[in-house]
Length: 336
Image (tube, rainbow, N blue to C red; front, side, top):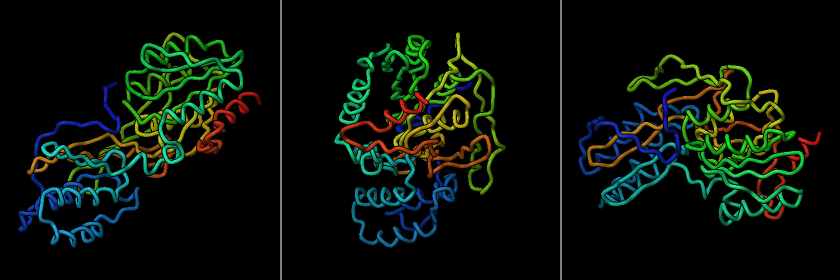
């Protein structure tokens, strides 16, 4: 399976192209950017965006632009309307970057807590209060803990972490159930997510489908089928409780999608971010780079969760700043 990087901050190098033909050369980058996305972006409908109206909204502000920085800022405001974690605009010459989606201003956990560390401190203290050991770290920065009955694995990235996950799973294989925490996992790549999912299943099955927008048309390529198949020396088939949040994104979104509905997996938490496209990238004529979504990802039953997130089986918020209610619910489910 090809190693396709999907982490939200990825840059991909694709040759320069010219799209727009507008008379106002001072604001040419605005029109070129708008046209490029109009011809290639895949998720306007899924995200409820009227791109023509967005053009009119921000075009009216161009008369006040006098510097390239001001133009860059208007373009950033325009792409922010997409609310897409895979879309960003970069001006390397000025050291400027803006994202269509802001984790810190939008995700519930980072609104409730001062930092990721503050969130994990509550999670760790909750685990220890119910008899779990202190977290141990594997070689690839995957963390795990356990008590007499259950195990806990914290996976903060879906890239380069399979070896660490396998090590943690090997240490927990005799436990009666495992909590797998990907609440602050922003993504990674398809290879890793399928390797890890393959340790939790004993059969090959279709996990999802993808299609790519054909540039300058409203058509898409033929659906490509993706599968999960058993991986590694053994498969853990006892109960797994998968913890998610609206920070769970990209490859971790697809990981959740791949395990949703499996008989031994229960998803607990809040809906994922719903950002599942790969990242395409193009350079504008002025040197700015635009990263954007050009694919659509469907569940095995052809549901598009982009912009909505994958719903959990059991809804619990991760915003209590004294006790981790999601971990407590996971343990309760394992006890039943």
